[in-house]
Length: 543
Image 1 (cartoon, rainbow, N blue to C red):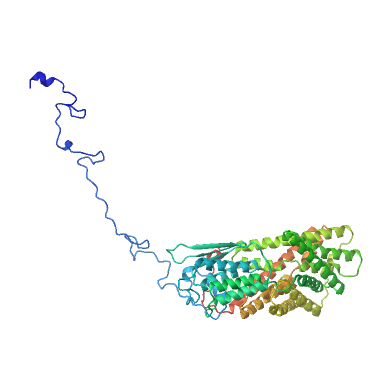
Image 2 (image 1 turned 180 degrees about the vertical axis):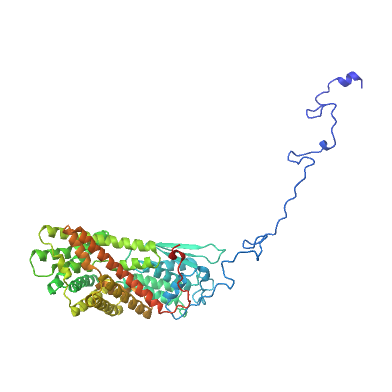
């Protein structure tokens, strides 16, 4: 090829756009295919770290030394085994385990009610919630409801369960093991009714389920629970109305009333009870039912004063107040607060406050009209209560008897609670009248004996303590102090009225705390099986 031909440009087919220009030598390395992500020449490639073999999440990390480790939380000897006394009622055994951490609870020794394929967990939880609903709606304390729910689950082999009870909501969670997903169910309590016969039947069902010798299947438990729900109240409506009248009459005798006062208080309470039933049939809330029920006794007392009848008209109004004061809800609310269920306790006490305000409104309306008409009863009349021990003891027993009927108790428990109420008034009278002790302290001691005897009788019969304690505190309710405070407010003596209402609140708290303390004292005589059966939480020690 000549030199001229060499300078002549080549055709497009002969030279490509990506061909190196003339005069540039291309090395052998550039002829190979390379990537833009390839490392430059001369740069060392770091070696990946050596992978440790995959282990458990609970395996000690590398570099861990036992000698340099801090003291472990779990003691070296392990957690001591808890053994419960088997001959105790199921309430105490379940309550003891509920106060333990889940990991420390003893596993059930035998599960006779578990089928071969295992328990139907959703149905067991549903049965547990239905039983807890009946107990909570009947006025049982939150801790006792949780103990009953835990007993039902444990009887069917579900030992790793956690019940939770509030004022209107029940929930329960069950987790088979640490690696399984938990199963949670809940139920809402929308209606509440006082029927201690139904409450006793539910306790009997739980007691039969907790018996290791019994073999009650889920279908049988559902059948018995449905039968309990279908059962009618043991006392008809007219008996309840008559019992409310007798209760008001007996309360009027306690504060110095005679036969005329007894009859007037009985008629006023019966009329108020019928009006409350009428309002309930119309769908009015309980606040207005209490307001309407408090008006007839106050109206009859004012009418007797206007007619210048020589009777203690103030005792008529006081007797009507005894029939309306919510002692049952008060005791349950304070008990929940003392056992650590503060949300439920606050809700119960708020309910008591609404009922009490309803009573106050009803009585104040009538008293205000009476004062304007010149028929204001003498507030000093209640301060001069004549001591009639035999009449007052009989009246207190009659009051407890009628209170038990209003609570729809079983006939087998009426006699015991009647005697318990008589003992409570004897103790109160001996301390207050004979011993000249303050009424608050006397009430607290008498209520403590009521709680003690009620709890012992309940443990003897393996039943709930409510039927033995609620009606027995009826004679101790602060009806006189409540009326005196309302009358003073109606007469524009606000300071004296507030002082009297504060005294009534103190008496009510003394009743509730005394009943709970008596119940706790009774458990000191019961051997649960563990020396640390109720260890206090850190929050109860101030931090």
